[in-house]
Amino acid sequence: MHLVLPLVPLFVFDFFYYWHHRLQHRIPVLWEQHKLHHTERSLNCLTNLRHHWLEEPMRVFTITIPLAALIHVTPVPATLVGSLLAYWSIFFHANLRLPLGPLTPLLTGPQHHRIHHSRQPEHRDKNFAAFFPVWDLLFGTYCRAKPGEWPATGLFEEERRATLSDAVIGPFAAWATHLRATSSRPSSTRRVRGTFP
Ligand SMILES: [Zn+2]
Ligand SMILES: [Zn+2]
Image 1 (cartoon, rainbow, N blue to C red):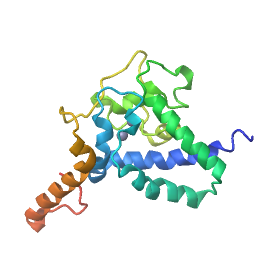
Image 2 (cartoon, rainbow, N blue to C red):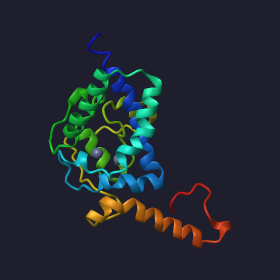
Image 3 (cartoon, rainbow, N blue to C red):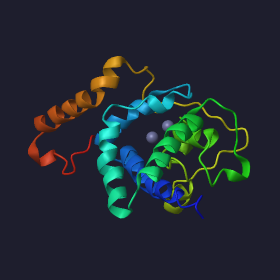
Image 4 (cartoon, rainbow, N blue to C red):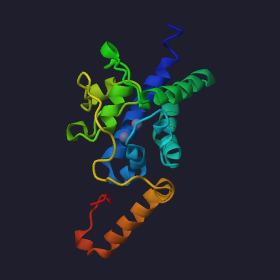
């Protein structure tokens, strides 16, 4: 029991991470911030670090604060969650041809997360959970890779590689473009939700 208890914060963390991540793919304004992570065309153990610098500040509001409000996390489980997140994320982004077999629906591995980064249309918006695919199973976004399936990865819509400028100010430039496009449109044609075209 003492071994399982520290995993509870990790499980709850993954619930909030699932929705944080799913909304990043669902809401165009958030996608502009997240898509840097998906520009990687050769997944490797460093891909986990390919996030825009706003990623961690945003997670404070969407994951850390709700998690702290829901359960009392003491320093030891908090450290455990942070360490497992860091190391497991390195593992499932690694360029490893390592299927997890019967553990696939239980734990995220390199093949499972590769489906999330896949450029195949049938893999779009699948496998959002960081650790426990059960969240994808519950919310209808689970996609199990076929045996031997290791699809090409990268963005669907863009061929060019990300630049340093994209990494630093890319979302701000996209948001500014969107605002200019919105303000130049007649008010009767503006969208209410503030999402991109
Ligand atoms: Zn993603
Ligand atoms: Zn990833």
